[in-house]
Image (tube, rainbow, N blue to C red; front, side, top):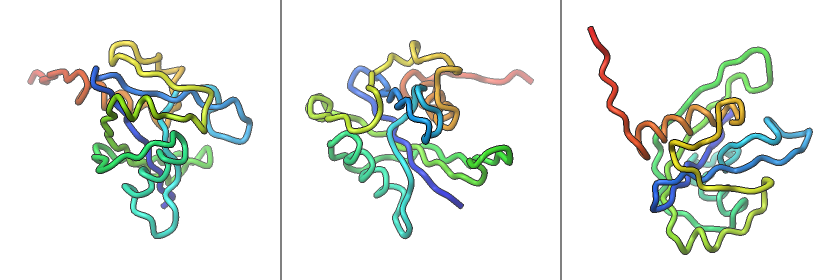
Length: 147
């Protein structure tokens, strides 16, 4: 099982930070909005992988990320088959945000939960985590099925 991690970075205003992915042919989903993160290395715990990836990509140190969702992707039509993606919630302080040095992606932006990009603008592997975070953490919705 190939594992990777993704950071749901939020600020005090309950904004969600998304990365505008690079326009490179050798990466998945170039030019779409997604989450910061990456692969879990051999014998590395997902939480440690997230802390490492965030430092490598943004030069900020995060502590105690909270795992909120794990998704297994099973798609026999591409090389994503058998990939497990762990989504972690990380609240950033104003100082951490001010200290960001972007090393990966074209840019980043904090989005209000009601104004995230449309689904066709999101990296598919991150869309589930982004929507889940918006609906359950940043702007919880009470949805009760009728029987």
